[in-house]
Amino acid sequence: MNTLGKLIARQIATTGPVTVADYMATVLGHPEHGYYMTRDPLGGDGDFITAPEISQVFGELIGIWCVATWQLLGAPARFNLVEFGPGRGTLMADALRAAARMPGFIKAAAVSLVEISPVLRSVQRQTLEGYDVSWRESLEGVPEGPILVVANEFFDALPANQFVRTEAGWRERLVGQDDDGPRFVLSSIATPMTALLAPEVRNNAPVGAVAEVQPAGIAVCATLADRISDHGGAALIVDYGHAASAPGETLQAVRRHEPSDVLRAPGEADLTVHVDFAALGRAAGDKLALFGPLGQGEFLRRMGIALRMEKLLAKATGKQKKDIVAGVHRLIDDDQMGTLFKVFGLAPHGTPPLPGFET
Image 1: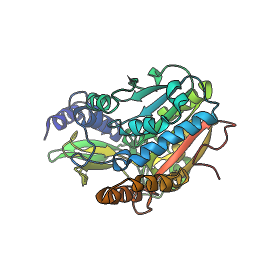
Image 2 (image 1 turned 90 degrees about the vertical axis):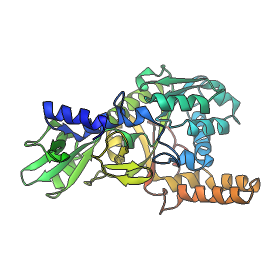
Image 3 (image 1 turned 120 degrees about the vertical axis):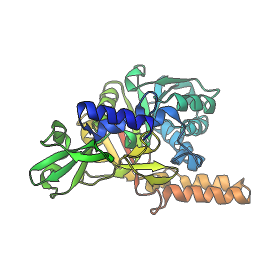
């Protein structure tokens, strides 16, 4: 058992089993031993790869989306361009490079990165050297004013509570331990977090079904809705998940690009769940207009990925051409990231359809 595993075991022995959400929060964010606090997990030498690392086209099209949305919102002379969970800074670097074709946008943008990992902040500084960037712990630290937010594979890493439908009703799944190590157990009574389950899930799921909720994701989206409603702006959320709330167990651990045991070697593998986009929409409430979710492949096609690929291919060598084509197909094909990954837009009521969401 590693150091973080021993700390978690000690906590369970002292205070009893912990929720899956608390377990995830500790595994990913423990100040000394948490997964995101101790490493750069991205790339071929890491544990997983995200769209900006697959192809520069992804970040470039996000940059074009930001420029077009800024214009749609009236081209404010000063606004906050914010990325949640910016990874290595690759997406923002590609987006700013593409957006530089519109100098007024770059001049107006105050760039903020919401990042808690000291390791990744260091990498982001190198990637974005030459740009004026500020780092924030949360959205609350971003200065007042209109805001454009991009969140790519951010919500999937936020802690989730899990529940199991039993003959006696919903019971929360907890992480306990016995002589053989950590294991999942169920609460003896219903817990308050059950109230966050969507009514159609809470009332209709069969016995034995597992359901998940992300209180932190709901809270972030509600705060984002307040901010956009009060100060103007828009948000683009890209992640893997489902459009409608439904039962299902999606908690997974990934290490070196392979599935891993969620309870084994905590802090050494990434933990994620599939995002419930309907829950994010409910969190925005009546304050914002919602666009999508739309499959990532369809969104990128509408944003002009084929044309951008053609322009890159015209200047590429043989191997580069193969890599460009392979990267684009990985982003848009249905059997790759094209349908599992979805794109969700938020904007004030009365805003015309955001770029990529036009019908």
